[in-house]
Image 1: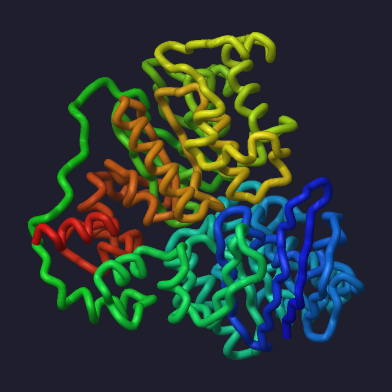
Image 2: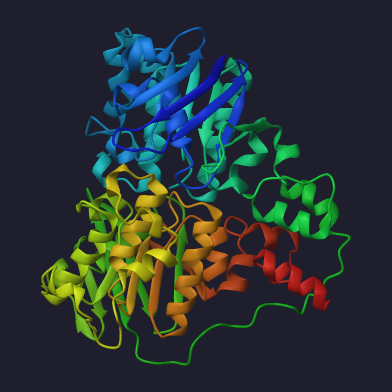
Length: 548
């Protein structure tokens, strides 16, 4: 169905190929997962299938790719779109229409599908992806996860033979991710739909796929095999595989059900719960009182009260559309409050401009592209310094100290694992690399209040660990961090406190270990494997077993 033969592709104005000598073959009806570190070429490989590379990107291509007998390089994206459905990493950039139902119908209209059949197809995908209640909503009013599901629905409505998805669960909560993946597998089994996707959150996707494709940016070619065989051999693996490798479990379990067969035989102490990481009561630097927000007369937040103190990492979890991003955006004035009060660093933000608030607060939005406008990665950080200090580019060469913080772009880029990209154009980077550049831009000034919306989007396991280490270090130094994520494994690494939102209301607020362990929806893999222990991470499991 899909065949790559010695494919090498190089983007314009670069000397290093994004793909080198890739050879692989996928039969019709496959469900394949492409994995690799950020910048290893995953998105590029997917774009080759629909002809987006090289038609939209330019560059040079050697070798060949065939999809159901069609050559995407010769046929181009327009012809290939009848065969291949594509869901981009950035669903925000894929939308054309304003309303959900119109967006799903748009592709069908362009393909000349009769009106009666069009209505049937739209209803089918609305039900399949649980979007019926959102059909009349404006896209701009949806959460990132809801927009992601709309993009998938628009692609499925065209009934392609091949569906290509780039990070399809990156903005979905655990339940929505499982629902979407289950729906795709049903289509695969019932209709023979061939699915190829790229994902960093392997713990979500591995149980659903039959083929793994591993790309290594330091080596040519691609490693292809069964998940049960390759999962334990590759440097990237989810917590359950890491635990299995450390404890010598064979065969390597990929699901919690398979892992429980092993974990139930492991001695453990139920008293080894993680201690509370709460700080002593001090003056809250974020103080939210009775916050109400609505979109299109639909409530997004309903009387939220929340305080964050210095030395805390508070993680906001909840289903897509529960109000997490709305809460974060309200703290910097991007989403106005209908009622309630927000106190930041002892000052009411009412009437303050976003730019003024962000001089004291580091805010990372969901879309990192909103923060990228310089010519190089290094310059992105320098511009932030200039905006905060008023110093020219020449003056920035001299030492400058902001409060007790010395801005050091080179050091921060190294700590984020992107020092080698310092002179690259930011928008030419992968989503994960752009995310780290945006993080650097907001973190360079050492703000004592950090607001991060989905900071692990597009990040591989190594990059997430680097970010976790940074956040824990800043927490120790007294920063207050409020973080929105659907990545429960990352939450387990960094959270001192977890707040669960549902339908705009806080339904749980407590220390990370008991709150995450008790949640049937948001418990990390370690907690599911070893219930009742309070263990949330691989390190906690291994330490607990050793002490037990």
